[in-house]
Image (cartoon, rainbow, N blue to C red):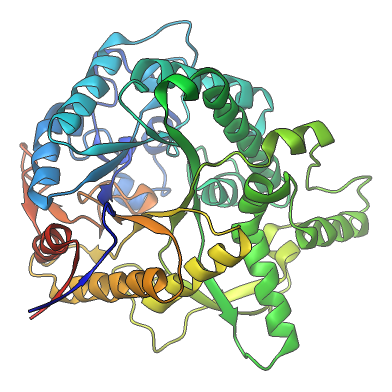
Length: 473
């Protein structure tokens, strides 16, 4: 039996998000969040009008989750805090002690088993009270988020040493505020994505500086932001137009948030020029892309202690072929990503399985962003419902992906420090409800006690974790 080892102290983890697993949507003084509101309004926004009201029941069954983590032998567990469970109206005016107690129990239980928590402050679940005041469309939310972050650092930072401020700002900006597909469902094509993204970047920077100024010296932790990105390659490698489209695709996707935070506090040049040109053609007096002041640029740049990457798939990119009416994110980007029909698709239509894309993206981040420490904070493969417990095909995807991560480390010199599978549990997969299964553990949502059962992929992942390497029989 041959084993290909990962570096010593490599972080092996799995990830979850509060709304997707906790349930207890109105339990013990928790305030409403935007997903409570969005799923309760009816309509056809979510698969079969399903909600996260109960989900995996982790608010009650958290000890069962810890058993799953222990069964996998993980060194790390990534989870998110429910802002409105801790602060029902989103502000520190009223603190819900039962919410604090819940996360204290979870954190202390993890640490007792030598499992390191990686805690996300915000994973898509804005308190409804803050949304009612503008949410990410309002500049004021950056200041409210800073106060929330300081509360979390002061409450949990004596034990939590790895923090993520915001999960996937690109997805929220595009799908929540541009297209209106995700909560709060306030699509405003051509404007909403850029406005909300602008405020998320400032919120992240303020939260990082709050830690750096008031907590870092004593708590000695690290703070970052989780950015999602496809890998992208020209549809025709010989085509100059396809190459330029590919550059735009990556600029509007990855660099939109990574460049300000990791490099210079400002947006990619191609984003600024494309949106400005289109705005002028639309008769607007200024660009639809907001500008950072020099003071804000200085505040934003360098506000990440490591690079968090959520990777799922790859696209072949060419210029946008469909003309769009009115201003939109896609018409500004002037590029479209296409799946190669030869790539296998896992569980959901968009998820083409391209393990080598992750290796290339990791090397690209290394070269573009100054060789940072990188944690792969999400990566996974779905099954459609009903799932197969003996998911050997899915474990094959995991293994191929981990092979590519190891190549990135050994052959490309990328400083990958850890890998977090999405997800620990089958859960409420946003607008797909429970129709899509990403879990390492199967959850039987038809049973009142919501039993967790390991998939084949979980059993094999545990072997990799134990060996700190890939195993070939």
